[in-house]
Amino acid sequence: MTNPVLEVDDLYTHFFTRERGVVKAINGVSFSLNAGEIVALVGESGSGKTVTALSILNIVPFPGRIFQGSIKYRGEDLVGVDEEKLRYIRGEEIAMIFQDPLAALNPVMNVGDQILEVIGAHRGHLSNEEKWEMASEAIKKVGLSDPERILTSFPFQLSGGMAQRIMLAIGLMMEPAVLIADEPTSALDVTLQAEIMEHLRSLKELHDTAVLLITHDMGLVAQMADHVLVMYAGSVVESGDVDTIFRRPAHPYTWALLQSVPRLDSDEGPLRPLPGSPPDLTDLPDECPFISRCHRPSMTCRTSPRPALKQVGADQVAACYHPLEPLDQ
Ligand SMILES: Nc1ncnc2c1ncn2[C@@H]1O[C@H](COP(=O)(O)OP(=O)(O)OP(=O)(O)O)[C@@H](O)[C@H]1O
Ligand SMILES: [Mg+2]
Image (tube, rainbow, N blue to C red; front, top):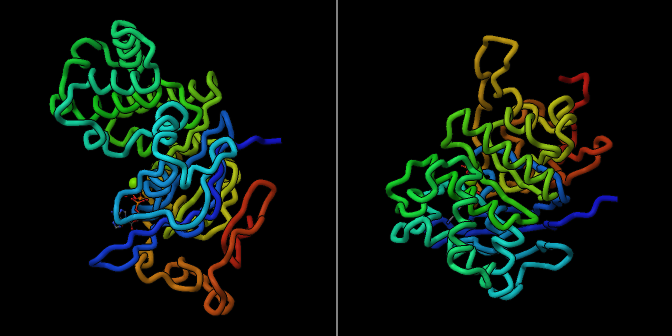
């Protein structure tokens, strides 16, 4: 039997803006992460990947708010838990590598002090030398060779790639039970990307960490993930084990996402990106949110409420009235 470390159930996170009204960023998202599992969260820009991650850590910026659902960490609901407890959980139990690492680092504090602060919050009993040693080790682990120099630098002295690796070092340092990595390698070259993915994999294998890997890169998903969640307009529209998702996607949106991946065995280059755009999140339709881009909406799709996720395979669910059959593809 699987034992989820983190369970997100029927999550709604909306932004109550003055100018645009209610931006319905997350609408009824449910999924779980098991120990030692890498789950990829994919979907085009604006689909709600980052807001899902921020919701898990309860750091959704104003005017955003979780207003329904639960996020259980080892069975305990984090929604509504006090800030002190959350501060402990963040970093020690659940860590996040942010999409924009330079924005996540404090610009007026050197890197060493920032790392020491994180260590101090979780390992207060260590001496300063021991903390410094731990920080240097963490820096070396992500492939940065001169830890002394890095630790005495300020964020503006770092390249985007270095900043991202420092965020990764901070994320990995406490060996958290859950690591959320939001586009952790988008600013890095291919070699570095491979190194960092190796770190994620060893974290999963050595420490049984559950990893939520947010990415646009379906190639990376194929290499790294055990399970895939596909988001569209703030909802999970398909979820399944990685082989099934790549071989037999059931939702037409997943199929379209896979079509836009460049193929190694053809020189066509990246195939067509999905035409059209997602619905306005301030004015979501009552019916299927994918209807305007679907190549085969039926009368049922047009006259029925938003489809719920339903079982379409052994380890596969899709929110579609007419899931694709293997022969359709
Ligand atoms: N502070 C905010 N105020 C209003 N709307 C917001 C705010 N932050 C995010 N949103 C909206 O929430 C939706 C989801 O955003 P999110 O950042 O989660 O997308 P994403 O899937 O991470 O995209 P990307 O791939 O570009 O990182 C977007 O439509 C965005 O406009
Ligand atoms: Mg994002």
